[in-house]
Image (cartoon, rainbow, N blue to C red; front, side, top):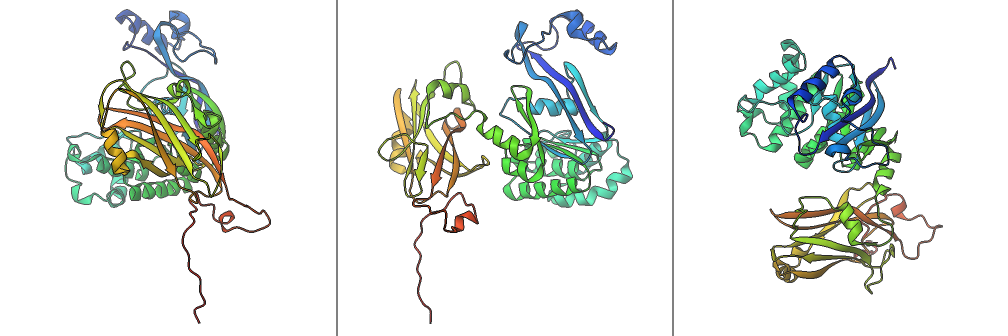
Amino acid sequence: MESSIILVKNLSKSYRLGVIGRKTLQDELRYRWLKLTGKDPEKFMGTVGKASAEESRIGEEGQFWALKDISFEVIKGEVVGIIGRNGAGKSTLLKILTRITEPTSGDAVLNGRVASLLEVGTGFHGELTGRENIYLNGSILGMKKAEINRKYNEIVDFSEIGEFIDTPVKRYSSGMYVRLAFAVAAHLETEIMLVDEVLAVGDVAFQKKCLGKMKDVAGVGRTVLFVSHNMVAIKNLCSRSLLIEQGRLALDADTDTVVARYLDRNLIEGSVASESEIAARVEGDIKRDAPNFRITEVRIEDLQGVTRTVFDSDESVVVSVSFKCFKTVRDLRVIAVVADENGSPFYGSQNIDDCEIAKLFYSVEPGSYMAKCVFPANTFGNRKYYLNVNVLCPRTEHHVLSKILEFQVDFNGYNPDIQYASSTWDCPIWPKLNWTFKKSS
């Protein structure tokens, strides 16, 4: 306990759906008074029910439990990953730790100065320049001007936006915001660093640079809580991770164990995802009350139309996506993406890549449809894969299914007595290419 830099005990956060604050001003004042005097508002006001683990996150009077009874401890110098599906409560947890919002119950104790990067431009004032915002952020973190001066050049150099440093940040692009915000959070001398999925906004080169900096930060004994959907980054940075599910702490263990649990937790067994299973898993920008279309089935099958979960390397893998259109939609796109064992997408295709098929999907009348994509034989290496599916109309509606199904590819005629190159380099893509071999002299 003495070496703990972060201690979270029975932390819960609820929101009343459709209501901001308490029902009345009197209730709000009473609630605040009970909190100030150290009493439990739930006990005295009787408005917050103790939902059991089996109950829904939506309790009595439309209360939504973003977090429920979360407890964990972080030792100084640890780099801890926080993973979970969208809406699981990860960002809410970080907002409580940074004092952006207060918990409904429970405690969160942080023994050190905190630098946070929860969303683009966190803590920035749009009218101030980049230079002024560096000093503003440092002052908010309790640093002296001399400390900020000492780090200033490093921050500007790392952000790579030196020529715009005296420009008001309201004129920055989202990428420039991220560059400067991360540079400030990573270089100012704080004991704790909290980073949400904001790095996804930056370009690939800068993301790699940020991940390298986070390794350096961890190497000098600073504590990092890192929220990300990038399992490769989580594995590279974090020896320990927390899995948040439905607002609760589902698992606190080594990163490999937690990532494996996260990837397999909600995977649909078999090679077919039904309409009801899809409805429970679909995410994205969806018009729930009156959607333009709905995904009804996703299948993984062979060229003969037989659904399967295991393929030989010399067989084609066919992805079939069925959906219904309820009104005429334009520029409909169907995307199939294969992810590796870490959940990282690496191989994808969309219907507009085929010009002839794209014409059929440009203006789709109401009705039922099926789109198929063939991943050719001799493409995949010997391992397990996940399937992601996205059906969308740009700027209108997006239906996303992440890791909806899985399949396995085995090398055809695999002989365990032979040392294959792929067992040395475990490549997800292992195509059969044309080689030449001849004696040169």
